[in-house]
Length: 138
Image (cartoon, helix red, strand yellow):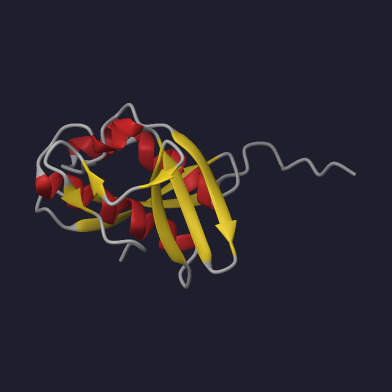
């Protein structure tokens, strides 16, 4: 029995970006598909919309990162991203992009341990500077 949503039903999607003063900010968008952890990560990886960017909202996450998958194992959530997640930026940028991801995941999984994997492997260091990533993420 397929349930068809009313035409143009919009759902609240939330993820975290940075404001021009460098603070993490929850951004809400009305979108046509239902919210889920995977969808929120997809929204996060797409980056700010043009109107958001005009207000000084930005992402530390490079624009060419792909979500490989999300795995739930008991109390753990593993977010597997493509290697581009570690590209560019210095230590602060790497630390901030991990925070963006972690805060976005915690919207859906507030009491779970969140682990970052890159190309299917749990990582300890990320980026050219080899920034240490404490697992599970804070």
